[in-house]
Length: 284
Ligand SMILES: [Zn+2]
Image 1: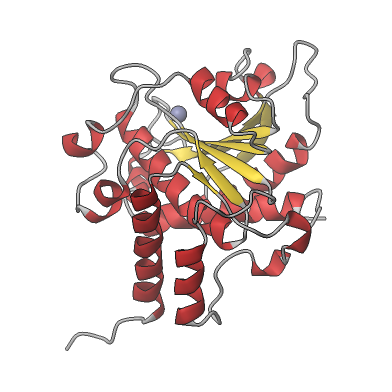
Image 2 (image 1 turned 135 degrees about the vertical axis):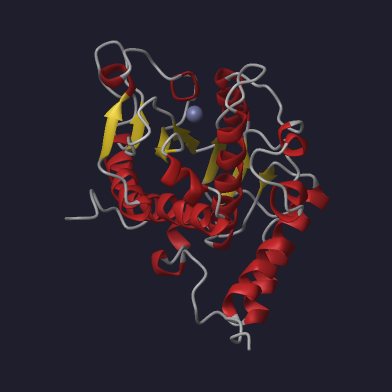
């Protein structure tokens, strides 16, 4: 005898399906909502257990209408890779999945979203039962250098940028969370708010991914150069390296879309904590 299914999960999946179907139909990479940041209730950022099915479905149907005024902050999401032919296709796929989950959360919280790259159709990404390593998915990927993604966020007039990545190491045991911000030649960030934002994001991601350690770090300090997507963007931005897909156990977890959804929730909650609640760090 099969246990009765959890009714919340299928509903949530249906709303998600409906939302991305609408996004696909409208062909938008820029998505608007109507409410301003000051009007956003921080505690209602994510879909809650108490939302009725009708409310959730209505919000999914009305959120991405092209005629909505763009008065709320615009968050540009930039899923990483490929920046060259053959560049990290597996990572590029899971980065895009997290970007879609994060898009849904931000829209439901009345933010506007711009996708710097929207190459793999969500129907293929989520509903075609393709593995993250399937050629049919990889063939959709569009090569684009990080600078061009930054320019797309600039052209959209975005207020914030989140570049989504996962990490690789030759040691299969390594699994850490890193969240980067960019600094100038004097090791100073152009936007000071990126530091608490990166710290909050690293903290949330570290807990959800259960990595061995988490860091918020300046690109120049850690890697000795400026990350192209962050340094070419006019708005404050962070780059998330949530975990290491080169770790076999972590890779198995990353192949579960529900785990990627939790990753997106962590990034979302850190954003709300930093810019809506104004916390300097989750522990204060
Ligand atoms: Zn990457």
